Each structure stands twice: as C-alpha cells, then as structure tokens.
View 1 (cartoon, rainbow, N blue to C red):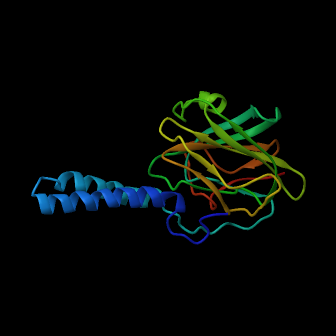
View 2: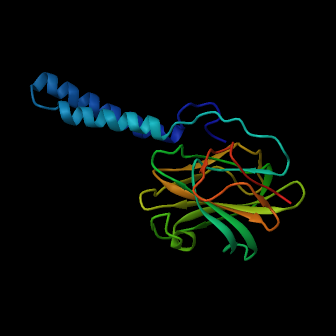
View 3: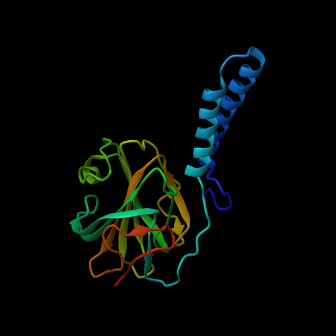
Length: 219
C-alpha cells in the first residue's frame, strides 16, 4: 500500500511540482522581462500550497476491537438507513460520508478483513450529496469479509469535481483496520454498507475522522 510514511500523499506530487514550477517560471520571467507576472505567479504558488494541503496524509490512532468498524474517510455523515446494496443485492445498513475539498482524502480500511470481491462502475458525476450518485456515479467498491465471515461493502464514489478514484486494494488482499487503501481527488463520497444487526454509533451530520471515528460494531 502507498503513503504509509509520507506526510503528503504521493499522488499529489505531480500537482505540487507542476504548480510550483509554473510559479517559479512566471516569477523569473517577471524579473528578467519586467512584465507584471507577480499576480499569476502568486496564484500558481497558492495552488501549489493548496495541493499540499489537499493531499495531506496525517497519522491516525485506530481504536482496538475485532468487530469495530471505523470511518474510511474524513467528512460528514449525510445518509443513514437500511437499503438494498446494489452490487450484492443484500439488505444492509448504509452510512454515507461526504468529503469536501477541505477534507483529508486518503481513505482507510474500515475493518480488519479480506478483500473477497472488487467492482468498478463507470458512470456519471452528479453532486455526491444527491442520492442518485449511489446508483449512477462512477465508483469503485470492495467487498470485505471479517475473520468471523461477516461481509461489508465500502464504495468510493466520484463526484461533481472528483474525477479520479484511486484504490490500491485488490481481491485477496488482507487489510488492517485503519490502513490506507486509496483516495479520491477533489471532493467525493464514501458509501459504507454494514450487515443487519450492526450497532450504529454515528448520527446524521456527524463529522468523521478516517481510521478513528467508530461507525459501528458488527454483530
């Protein structure tokens, strides 16, 4: 898995370097040609600084407990309820977490588990606060199985601005709760589907911290 010991996610390096290089070039041109390049140079420098902020990759302290499910993303809970999970067709408890452009976008495994299935659906780019996003937006999902055989589904959903889903985990991988497994660029959503009987420990509009906030306890 990537980004284990990097304060900034490696996926952000091209953006940071590109914006910083353009800022430096414009500053040099302004100095030698005596043109007014200060404002555009400052703009690209701000973009480079924002990219460092956006791709920040802080360490997290994951709570113990074999059946504890933690939030896979920083953000805000925008949906709670029983639904039919589209990929498996099973009735499950669904928790949706909205990530704004100001959230940490590195995603973490919600449970110590094995990846038993993976799916990718190419789709549209509705605002992720719209429930149509669950069914129609571009998304990458993982079916995870706990040590006791319980299954859950975690889905990275692209949004209106986010157009790039990155998932390192593959079928057969063993994930450790709180471990980094991917990210989504520039605002998005995570849908978490838990088996019926799970004790839900979050509420609507609650803020979550990836790898730390307890979403629920498996039955």
